Length: 262
Image (cartoon, rainbow, N blue to C red; front, top):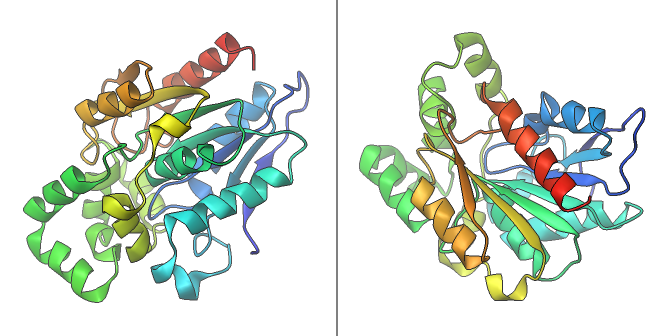
């Protein structure tokens, strides 16, 4: 599988363990490239973000509808296997679920779940979306396409960003959004849920207080499943790596990695 990988290498103070960033639904590697990749490279980490199959510039766009979470896990494994040592993993939203499933099978020294799909799946989030936008939800199910749910700048802002996001930035991010796999949605709903008891590594679980997809209580439930505390950032929405408050989030991850001696 030919996968797009965007990498930033540190110029000095090289840390021994690289980081692989895994994007969520409707996104691609681009969502890490604006802030997180250069920032973590500045702090000594070889930083890599992949576009999952059918996303960004990776191949498989024509088969995207039928991609499964297991396929996305295989994509992460493909990238990780090319690195000199098992990487630290940072997964956002759907990427958080992919990271959880990856950790059931593959080694990693540590991982970060950022506004992640909860261990119990996306049922509550799905019901909230269906309540807010019943016609769009019906269209998504009839066409087996999730794009209608984020198909305007207003819907993209409502789903991912704070209400005060500048219009230019919103338009720029909206232009990069794309469709998502319907089968992956079904996996997130019930068929591909994580098994926390199979994961034996250190996890940092972070959430956003203004997240309209996964509420803080769901983030906290995920953290409990991994026997770790959740940390919820105020005044920030779902796309924590692109929001105005991205830097405190990145600094918390860096601080935690230092605590883990990574």
